[in-house]
Length: 88
Image (cartoon, rainbow, N blue to C red):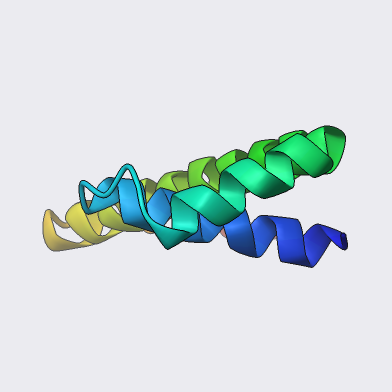
C-alpha cells in the first residue's frame, strides 16, 4: 500500500463519518487496510489530521485578516517602524 492510497482511505472514512455513516464501503475498506497495514494507516491518519489542523488555522487567519480589514485595522503585510520616514 502506498501512502497516498492510505490517505485517500482515511479521507473517505472521514467524509463518511462526517455525514453520519459509520458503516458501509468506506468503513469496510478502512478497517481492512488498517488490519493489513496498521503502521501505514496510522501514519496516514496523523498526516490527514495535521492537514485539517493547518487548513483550519489558515481559514481562521484569513477570517481574522478580513475582519481587521473591514474594521479599518492595520494591514498585516508589513512592519511599521515609527519615525522611519526617511528624513535626513
